[in-house]
Amino acid sequence: MEDYAACFNELFSRLAQRRGFRDYLTGLLAPRDRNKTLTGLAGSEPVKGAQHAAVQRLQHFLSQSRWDPDEVNRRRLELLINDPATAPHGCGVIAIDDSGDRKDGTAPAHVGRQSLGRYGKTGNGIVTVTTVWADERVYYPLHAEPYTPASHFVKKQADPQFRTKLQIATDLIRKALAAGVVCRAVVADSFYGDHDSLRGELSRSGLGFVMVLKPSRGSWQYGAEAYTPKDAARAVPWGGPDDPGCWHPVARRFRDGRTETW
View 1 (spheres, rainbow, N blue to C red):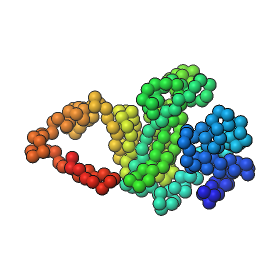
View 2 (view 1 turned 30 degrees about the horizontal axis):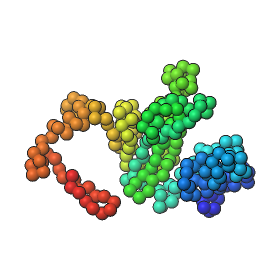
View 3 (view 1 turned 180 degrees about the vertical axis):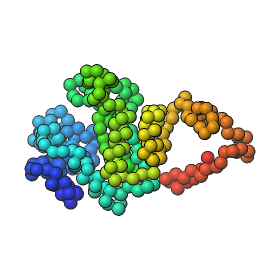
View 4 (view 1 turned 90 degrees about the vertical axis):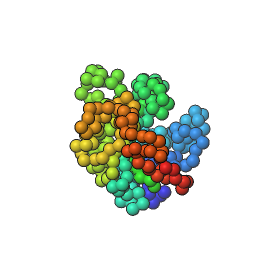
């Protein structure tokens, strides 16, 4: 880990920052039986250990010490892209998603009452839009940006500074491509798949995409009006396994080695 951490030394101006960076990495990688809060990262007790010297040092490094997280992330991606074991290639994908975490109060930045997908309900918390590169062997995060609810702006959604999750996702894809990340397609769930603007942006950029659509969502087909995926499936003749009509068998392979014909 020291060899890896040394690649970031020039991004920190002080020895204390370099030590803080190593402590942070150690906390992230060490196995823990609880959430990676500050006390969890420092290996201290919850609540009671908040005043421990190691926790206070980590708190200062993350919230007050002057260093550029974008530069640290840029260097991390450089190392991943230039390593043959993790280099992105044309058969992988970039996945878009967002993750929500509960947060009490209203003072912290980006906090608001919004949909928290991790919990499947609306609550007070912070939502972060993320991109991940993945193939069948490995996956790793690319970029992340918190979403700021409209309630934080004077003019709400009409405020020029307000950005939707879709706009953030589009910017993150551009950042990934600018960093040298290549992929076969961009994939996302129905929240992103249901919006024509994002799919249009991907189409104009020349990227393939696979987006989940809600069953009620219409999708344009060549030479026909918009209809839902269910309608499309019902339109294909099917007389059972012995008379599949226009359906074609697909061999589905699973990680344990077994196969099934669907």
